[in-house]
Image (cartoon, rainbow, N blue to C red; front, side):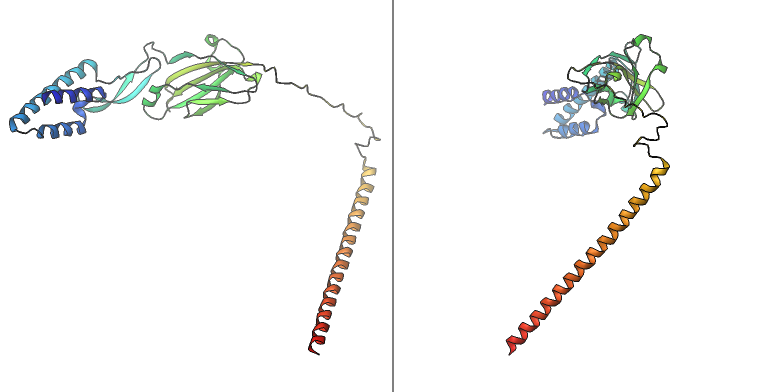
Length: 280
């Protein structure tokens, strides 16, 4: 049984949790101890379990817990963790080993008319306190990153999504894009730069813009520039044709209705005559 208990402790430790702080683990150990056949066996198991907890606490103090508190190799991580010594949650700050939030450049190349994916997600972003947002901005044109100022960047979008897709790329969309993961108070946790190069597509045909020649100014004989003298008769003719068409349509509809009524009356009389002959 002691070997089984030690094996159980090792398995739980591998699960990367605060063993001495987990209530479910404690209850499991208590049930395991009470399952011993004799009282002496229960006391022995309790002693071994207590010693295991003491050893575990000492290891937690040396290693600041069994879990990896700072998985960020760049950027700033502020997370809520369980203190394996006091068994209480606390805020733990993991600064970048380099002391900066800038996590480097990731060149992106795409074809004109295609799309480009900009993704600055890292797994440790899920551990951040609060609900940080991704701020995407850019500087048009091929510029040197080390010579850019904050004022050079124009905001594109602020979103909770870690990635954005640029569709139907144009040549003038080439430039330096930046992703910045920020808290609501402006604290920057992570920042990455994406220099985007747009390659001209050989299948993309660029048609020149055609400008139509303008008509001579003041040309009163142009058919596309009717004068006031021609406009009034034109309106009168259109109005007369419209009225004539309306009257003609009304006459045709009236004749059709009269013909329909006459046909209906003839059919009714014929049926009456046929009925009278049958009775005779």
